Image (tube, rainbow, N blue to C red; front, side):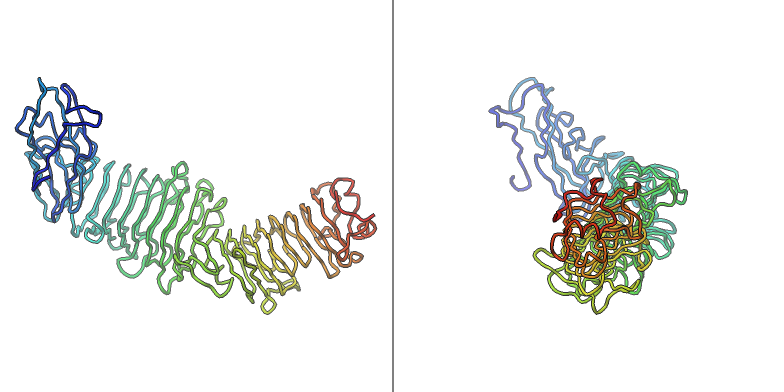
Length: 636
């Protein structure tokens, strides 16, 4: 390159050849790059002279689209906004040449603010797609409104120069990319209706909106993708959406939309707060209770967005599939707010399967009341892992320290893990977050001591109350109460009347374990328990525990079918009460029961119980013959 000239030499090749051959066609991608370093959008093209090849034999092309001739006339010119680049390839067709020899061609590159030609060349974007330019001060071949450009193109990139465009825009073209110069410089303001909208009775596919501030008109949405139309492959990226308080949502995506990506946008309010920012529909027609086509596709991906200035909900999803990841939610002072809501189906025909949801890696401001709200009619588990809370927690994107276990639990969202460091926490704890794991930090043995502030019901004290489904507690010492851990459908209230799926592992419980009614422990495993197990709820697995009872109580009282295996059961006074009995006086030999009581060691005050003691303390000994009590250690 010298001055304002560059030289392109196609003489030598890596394979030992020299030059291009006769009667051949060549495409050389990405030979050089052109960048617009000016302040206006330009159109670039080239013409060749001084040789035997003309513009029909040799031309420049954008990207890898060798069919797009950048030589004006009836062909194309590449459109470059300020700071934009294009990689330029070279097409050579030597079929018109009759002999070998050097062709010293001159290519003249032209850059102009006007589209050349009459009636004008077809502008192209740097990737080789058709392009149109919208400007507040349009040059020849450009448009003065976004809607005017959309109405005149088909499957085109529309480049919108900086400015404030006061218009409501209807998008009814497939394959459209609507690209602003940046959200800080290019603004669309709705005029009496939704700012960007699809037709209510049409279908659009493959639409991208990027690089704008989109401001809603009074009482309208910034974006409305009609529920009555079927739309696929929609992308909203790098925009700022400014909602109005009178609208149903800042951005409304109808239920028959598929493969919608909302990435790296900012959702805020034009002034004050809005009720809801992003609504993701799940019905074929809003309010119809008919499941949409999204039941067959990964409908919604919401990633890396920022939400603020909302009074009720930032994101509400009724779609069949959604991934909501790596977003940041900041609440408004004085409001009661939910960051993400998955409310559940409007009818049985529009059911949501929680297994099709992933809500992970999001950050929630401390002022958010509810991070993730999952409706009670959602089927299955919603994956929701939004940062580790470590007595230390990622509630606002960064680790935060809490003084109490309860404060950390309150800050956690569905499916989160609360990791607690060493120390004694003088408190009782209610775990009311679905799918929460309460876990001791590696190498730590935290203690929850509820002696000074226990829960009390049915005449007993309790330290940890589980009031939601699928809670796991791992690695704690819990002391100071009659029962260390409790679930009850009558004595405790919480989000779920009959919590189930709880797991207790690797704990030292200085009190017993209690559950009743329709509540259910999934598994009680590898714990040291100094108190009785009153398992009046649904079936449970009690495996590999050391359980000791000092008071004249049964070691394990059960209701429905249980698995009791590989435990050491130590009854300090076996003459007063059996080791295992039916809580309500029924017989464990009942033919309808399917208890498995196997491989346990029965102890009397620390010594292996003899056969006589065992006969005195169990409801039956015939179960041994039924292979229910097998391989127990007996002292003959």
